Image (cartoon, rainbow, N blue to C red; front, top):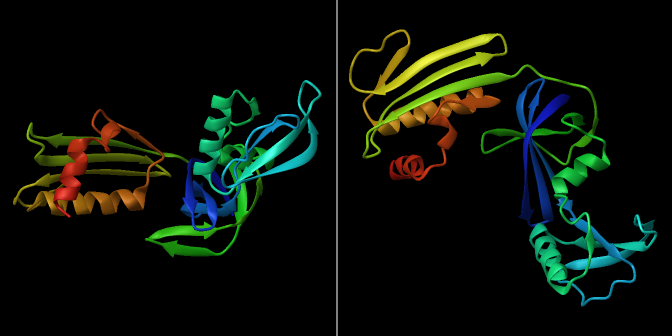
Length: 235
């Protein structure tokens, strides 16, 4: 299966560092998870410093630009990687490639630049199609993209009035306004008795559509305190 990486993140899990990639694939949105990764940066072989927690130093037979031999410092998890990097910086020890995130290194080592081909067992985790530790390789693939425009109307007191949705892409177009009220539904307008019912409908719609890009003045701040308060207060 082929796909295109939309976003990524790094987490520390029970098996070490996990790399998460959201991918738009030929069969829709997917999440790829890679477990047991060990973040790494490099130091000169002649550098001396106390052993770093949750790490292992290995000679690699590689040389830096100055011709000096370098060792790899491999960490059990990403948090230890960050702490080790900061500790060596405070000690004045020079490090190499300590600014490269594990996600980026993973892709660089496989010459993947956005597009990738992957194979593995698809399973649903929390309603999301997920593949854990798939085989991956580079490929050429640009999927059709979709764009969603949102218009969220609230009162000054954070009461939710309406959410307008306009999405285009994949050869389809969707227009709908969700409003709080007890009026009769219209072709492009759907009414809900409560804010909670409106939000549930919107979130379910959003989960199905999963646009590549969002636009609209209010849509760019979906993580704002007022938005979170509205969602959490309604359960």
